[in-house]
Each structure stands twice: as structure tokens, then as C-alpha cells.
Image (cartoon, rainbow, N blue to C red):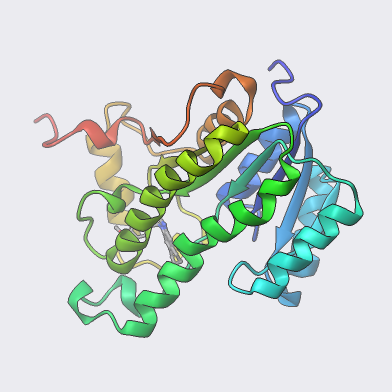
Length: 259
Ligand code: 1JT
């Protein structure tokens, strides 16, 4: 492609392994000539992300558990110390307790609800606030969502409610940061077999249903989600903010599948 991110620095949060959507986004950003910074969650993940970062040609790998204010402050300190200016930030982070993605939604505990909201939705607000001082040329913040935010998808449950909050946060952040030239958007990806999804009950059936119903008749490839993230991070996306872009083979428009 055409060096769409030449001379840009992109911070990517959420690389956990090579199946992570964030990993595909990092690879696409590098392909387009970006300088890439990665973060990892906790010491347990450090070596893995450092190795992936080296393979990807990432410039830096920084600590940041988004559920801890001290770690967000630490990230800011590290960016400050390196004199970094950020052009784009990708937030590809979510968490919920396994049992909350299988039991009926009505059974969700207060603590399970709060955890999903904190890690999956509030963290975008905290990351935006942390990164804003480094986005002095303006830029782009992109997060990842899923259709369960706006429709009932069996078992998505507490994550659906967290993604609904995330998509609303995208709009409020777009309004706050727009005057500084910072755009905020979400990509609503079709279901992808990441490590997080692997443990989900009946995930294979979700992928099969997608294959049968989506206009493109195939599952979502992390690389096509990554290319949309590149578009949003690049100057090509300069007029797009406060939006949710569906990268799902068109699944979202369907009501019933063709016979
Ligand atoms: C999390 C998990 C966030 C799985 C996720 C997720 N966002 C999308 N998926 C995949 C998925 C999961 C379910 C689903 C459809 C897609 C795992 C735990 C951490 C947060 O249900 C139809 C349950």
C-alpha cells in the first residue's frame, strides 16, 4: 500500500498474543510506515509483548494496566520522558468474567458488571485523557466494539452493555476532543476467533451463523479490521469522528438470511 501512516506515531493498547486484533492493527500500521508503540498489561504479559513488539518492529513496549490510575500516569511519564508526539491511539481492550458470558444476563453480579464497565468502557475515557496532551498535532483515537452493543446477541450479556457504554463514550469524547483536532471512533468488528473468544460457549456456532448470513458470506479477517483502523488513523479519515464503522462482512444490515 501507500505509506498511509508515514511520519506518524501510533500507540496501540491491547496486544496480548499474535491473534489479538491489536496485533493485526500493529502489523498494518508498520506496513504503512508508522512508528508503533505497544503497551502490555502486568509483568506476566511483559515478555510476550516485548517479543511480539520486536517481531513487529515496534519502537517501544510500555507498561499499562488500564484499570490502574498509577499505570496510566506511568504511561504518560514514559511518553513525556521520550518526547513522544502521538498521532493515533488504538484501544483494543475488554474484559468480563467468563461466567458472565454464559449465564443469563439477569444473573450479572454488581462486581462483574463494574469490572466489565471499568476495563472495557471507562478505560477509553482514561486513555483519551492520558494521551490528549501528547496529541499536539491532533489525531485519531480508535476503539473496538461489537454488534452486541446495539442488538441482543445471546451470551454477549454484560459485554454488550459495556460496549454500549463504550460506543456512547466515543460520541462524548468526539465532542470533547474535536476542537483539538482529535477524532474518536469505534470499529465494530464481526466475531473473530481471538484468544478471548476461544473460551466463549458456542463461539463456533456464532462464526457459522455469520458465514451463512453475512452479505460477503465469510467471517471477519483481523487484517480487514486492521486496514479500517489504518484508514481512521490516517489523514484519509480526517472527516470521520464520533462514529461506529462496521467491519463485519455486512452482517449488521441483515434481519433474516436469504433462503
Ligand atoms: C471479551 C470476550 C470481549 C470476548 C469478546 C469480546 N468482544 C467480542 N468478543 C467475542 C464474542 C464473545 C461472545 C459473543 C460474541 C463474540 C471474552 C472475555 C473478555 C472480553 O457472544 C455471542 C460471548
